[in-house]
Amino acid sequence: MASNLKHLTYSLLLFLFLQIGSSIAASTSDDDLSELWVQQDNRRFLNAVLRVSDLNRTIEFYTESLGMKVLRRREFPEKDYFGAVLGFGPENSQFVLHLKQIHQGEKLEIGTAYGHFGIATEDAYKKVEEIRARGGVIRREPGTLPGLSQIFAFVEDPDGYSIEILERPPTPAPINHIMLQVVVLDRAIQFYQKALGMQLILRFDNPAEQYTIAILGYGTNFTQITSVELQYNYNVTKYTKGNGYIQVAISTDDVFKSVDAVKSVIQELGGKIARAPNQITKTASILDPDGHKTVLVENRRKK
Ligand SMILES: *[C@@H]1O[C@H](CO)[C@@H](O)[C@H](O)[C@H]1NC(C)=O
Ligand SMILES: *[C@@H]1O[C@H](CO)[C@@H](O)[C@H](O)[C@H]1NC(C)=O
Ligand SMILES: *[C@@H]1O[C@H](CO)[C@@H](O)[C@H](O)[C@H]1NC(C)=O
Image 1 (cartoon, rainbow, N blue to C red):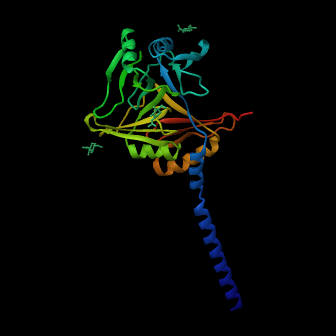
Image 2 (image 1 turned 45 degrees about the vertical axis):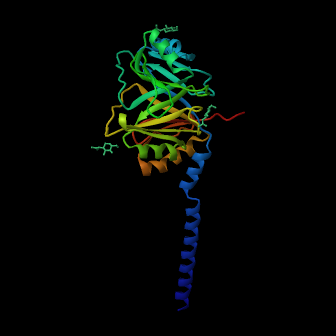
Image 3 (image 1 turned 180 degrees about the horizontal axis):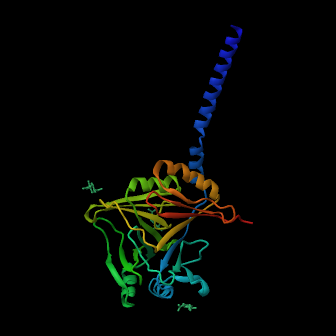
């Protein structure tokens, strides 16, 4: 009898202990901590990697027609490696493009999953005329959409990559966005919000042209920051990957914590850790539910 009572008391205590324990766990679960980390982390868009068939020809177009500068070049002819970093300003504060020439004997396939990058300019009409005068291909003449004031145009680079020209006030983010096609828009939006900590800045439906876009980034004024533009095309359920657009890179203060946060989101929304965090390089890469790659790069500690 006494031992039964003792057992009962013990069970009751254990039960209470577990209850309290789980309610503490619930109030600051790993998921909550991850979410907090994602919101507080020090992030920005670093670069996008794009492969091109003839690096010098692309450099000529991006510098002379678009107005970018060559910030760095890396050439190892013996390894068939030709790369360059281009942008409008310093890569320690601005989003830049890493261009790489495809290897000899390889064929560039642009695919349909990657859409375009956009650049901001104060006069889109003038910029398009300059591009036309140099023999550039104009895909869409400058103009606006009904009811909207944003002036934009589309041009083509020498490989046939699409580039959006946006009329914008002066901005610290002249390479303004990367557009990626997605099959399920809400899932993609949630992924970039929860796994990568971006804010949804704008969602816009264009039934006349049968698409919806969502703009997400680290900030609220999309003219002043680099963003990712997710595009859902009505009833399109499949895109081809290609071998041209590779990835976008984002900074973080702790690549391990950031990947942990992504892991819990992957369970819910899909996606994948493509490369686990590396102790030496302090980088990792992840795939969103549509297979688009983001590389997380740890900020160097300020000495
Ligand atoms: C591309 O331009 C660079 C710098 O002007 C030059 O060193 C290189 O040889 C050129 N590459 C080719 C394949 O012409
Ligand atoms: C965004 O910033 C630009 C430049 O500072 C400004 O002209 C514009 O009004 C801002 N837009 C919003 C929505 O705050
Ligand atoms: C096509 O997409 C639109 C917008 O998402 C949707 O309303 C419509 O039901 C879809 N039609 C078909 C045939 O799936």
